Image (cartoon, rainbow, N blue to C red):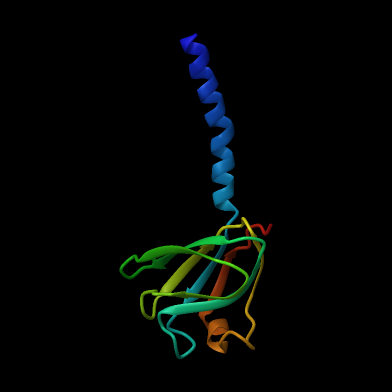
Amino acid sequence: MKKSLSNLILSLITVIFPLFVQAQTDSFVTIWDSSKGGTAYTSISFHAATSTTVNYKWEEIGGSGGNGSGTFSTGAVSITGLPSKSKIKLFIEPAGLQRFFLNTTNVTTSSSQKLTEIVRWGDAS
């Protein structure tokens, strides 16, 4: 009986853990340089279309190693409170994310200069 329960738990972990790991690897990942664009050195901005609230996290590349997280919904998104003039890796979870874009009509053109790399496209829901 004890062995059966152990086998069941091990089987569940074997099935569920890869799903969790897969969800983590499907994030949309970008690199931003907040020193570019001439203004707003502690923020980045973009637009998103979402079906629900979307989670994100960011981490500073080099520097003091700052990090943070938050949520956003459809519309203009501003992530503020970043370390000044730093490189930021932004991870946007796929759940609820339908579209990511820079709209220079409503988001400053400096945002398009700050986005330096798309590391991974991830999934959109």
